[in-house]
Image (tube, rainbow, N blue to C red; front, side):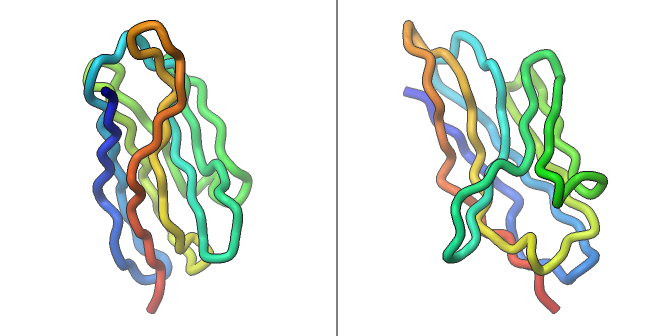
Length: 119
């Protein structure tokens, strides 16, 4: 069984920074990509940032230049450094991994971590 465990959410003032971390554990044969999604109240879940095993990244336009995604393939971890945070970044952030476990390739999700940007 695969688990994704997130950490690093919290309350921060506008303009501040937070770093989210996610670690995948269990029977993992290969991780194709890892990423972060977020869901604000009353809104659909959206992709924030994604990184492939080869290091290719993509970001939603609203976070470009402020957020940086990185991963450690050896440790099966992915981080999201969030700078210059805005109130509109407030949401529950979910870690996601596209990986193969045993013979099945599946998307796995973390439990979510709350990020609140407010003065």
